[in-house]
Length: 169
Image (cartoon, rainbow, N blue to C red; front, side, top):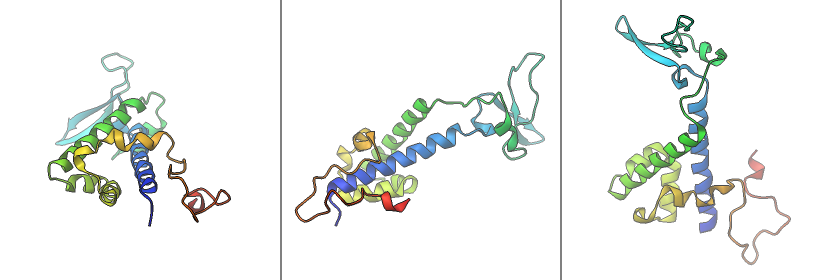
């Protein structure tokens, strides 16, 4: 059986990975992530159009839509992400806080739907939703690859053993 410290460490790693994936997805060079992308209605459909230097004669008037031409944004030298990594991390924390608050009010399914392994690890820890906050869960996050903070017990693995998660790469 895993110790509470190891489970908490795993929880911090899982949350860190979810956040990292969300930030990477939102910063990736695709049309809808660009600050210059404008949605325009055309023949009953919406279409992404480049709005770089909008309103000026030298404005780009290029279709930049992930469904029609996904490579345009990837190759665009004017691509600028809509958000900063710091703002996206804050947004992630706010969304996680919201899901934890819903779980506090008897709706744990939302957390389980969006972050199933976070919900499962909280269940294993028997965390009281009244006391759970995203920032408290991430207190250990400073280094998600560090070993759990549990001291080794009598008869447990010694210093010569590999750190956890090393063999899975």
